[in-house]
Picture (cartoon, rainbow, N blue to C red):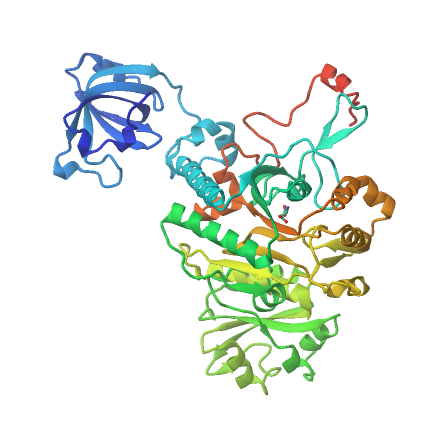
Length: 583
Ligand code: ASP
């Protein structure tokens, strides 16, 4: 075993005769002397060899990424040659003996951090890609984060319990990955979308505080921050209030930031309601690292005869909203403005317009429309000369979402975001249900086990749309990094909830009977939350794609180019499972 990683060699090793083992990151051979950058997971060590040593000629045809064992003396570098960019930059190893432990073929792509090899090739040779410093450091960061989480939860008396991966398919939520059973004819296991019911049953088992860093599986279409399998920090607690869960998680996230960034976050995370998040930011996961909030012009527009305004106000729940980009009056070309307009219209808004502010006046096509309200409008936006204002009209939710997305795009384009900042935010007071147009029924906004925020004994089912929930989301820099809720723990309430979701007694008895029965045996009140570990680490690593913080991720199509998975299987395997393939 190596006693010391070579990337950590320093002045303490000067004068020692050591054997350094590592990969050849680079070699400069000047004929009579050669400099080798030898790398291990902790960094680079410069090796210096001159032609007087017997092994010198071994260096002639050496490929990068071959592994060497170099024995020699660690010497201090002359001050002029100290390299401040690497940890071992004050020393180098003067080679006396060089052994080639493993040869490398010519590489399929360059491994330095700045080379832009395509993602497909990086994933095909993932074991090479992971040698890049950035990737190694992402994996180390992930380790620091999970270690901080485990330490924190251990101190808070949580018990780490594993739950099965071969579970049961239940309706609600995303599409399941199914696993055919060989033993039980025509029956299937499902991979868990989350251990939701199982962790609740662990509360029924009297564990009181459970956690697990667990893989979850959802067969959904993929995006940059989604993978078919992903990792959750899943936790559940008995006898708690929403505040208890949130405080616990907040403390845990602060411990993670301390461990990974060395920063003490002293302030409480801000909390806003779902309604306020939508109203101010047009998003249920607002990025609060910059302002540019949405402003509501609906009241001010009501008596206005402008067709642009009236067309939007006529829509169900019609609204006129705007946002103001400071100093951006001439930031965009016509083409860029057209693209921005299209991106807003794609949300299905009724109308979109822009205006600049010049000499204290709104200009452009809306100049006369808002003539009377010019001062009021400028005041509302806090707008000054040189600003650019965007207006959208139509159904409230669509306009909010459209401007919410525009707000993010503008912030990126105008470079308004301080990338070092970490803005956590709790979003609370969610509606319990939302209407699903396609299914023609309500669906749970969080999941069907979430408690509604209603008084005991009240007729809460009467007006389903109005019921609020005891759910909470945790947001970081505009990403939802987790969510949870207090749960239903009474059978009658859980059954009523299933019925609100359009299930018949026979259906929920079949799918959830085991769970409902458990509620009959002294089931404690409980609640919890799950964090998306990949997303959290992605943000802390300053990456934009979760694939960068997962050792062996799937590609954008959900395949693994290295394992060449998914793949066809043999006839006998299919026969065991009694499966026939169809085109
Ligand atoms: N199981 C939930 C989810 O995966 C989180 C929770 O409610 O604890 O979203």
